[in-house]
Image 1 (spheres, one colour):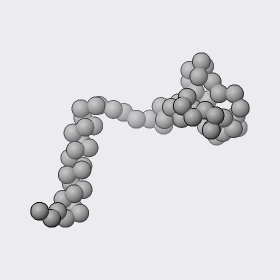
Image 2: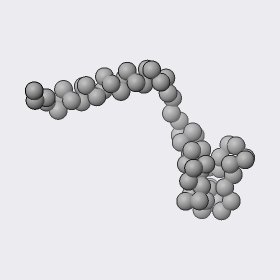
Image 3: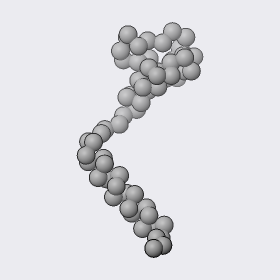
Image 4: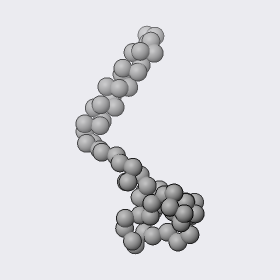
Length: 65
């Protein structure tokens, strides 16, 4: 069976909606920045130092530039 792009996109949207409802996940920029600094602090230390990326909320995960 050959599907149109519209059918493929609709199927994907339905799966995304289902999984989103199941996870009830709410992403935020603040959480994303915390993750970035915690897990890749060495790569973004300069950006944290000059204020481009905010320092993590948890002081135990602080990055020293």
